[in-house]
Length: 188
Image (cartoon, rainbow, N blue to C red; front, side, top):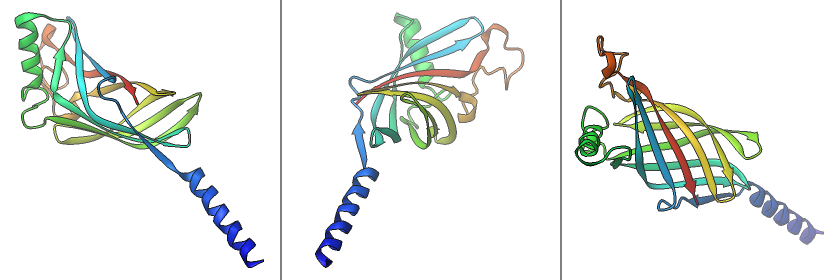
């Protein structure tokens, strides 16, 4: 009888561990992509930025966590060529915007995840840009080995105020909107 109880406890422990087990899936940074869109009164610019590293955590088949590091030095404008592209890339990397010399990476760490069903999750995460951390909430769809999300980031929360109509008067058509978008496709 004692052996039967020992076996039952061991089996229950194994089942509990298996049900509660988490799996970390490293993101393939070569196949993943982050596209950005920044808008101003007279139009918009778009480009890419590289993921340095990242991982998604799953509990069974359900999303349970994630951490990501973005290489801010890789900011790349894709809608311009030549000198104008170089000028904008340089300005975005400068202290006016992301200050990549002092802050070469940005980080995103998932804090809470709500399962909305059909592989759709609402994620609240801490986003760190330029040494400042603020919460951000976004939806993420996870299918097989891909996760897709769109984040809308208020740059002024990270002390990026250049050209912001929220902080400067009389900018006219030189106003740059506070929000920028990140369209993210993760492969893992």
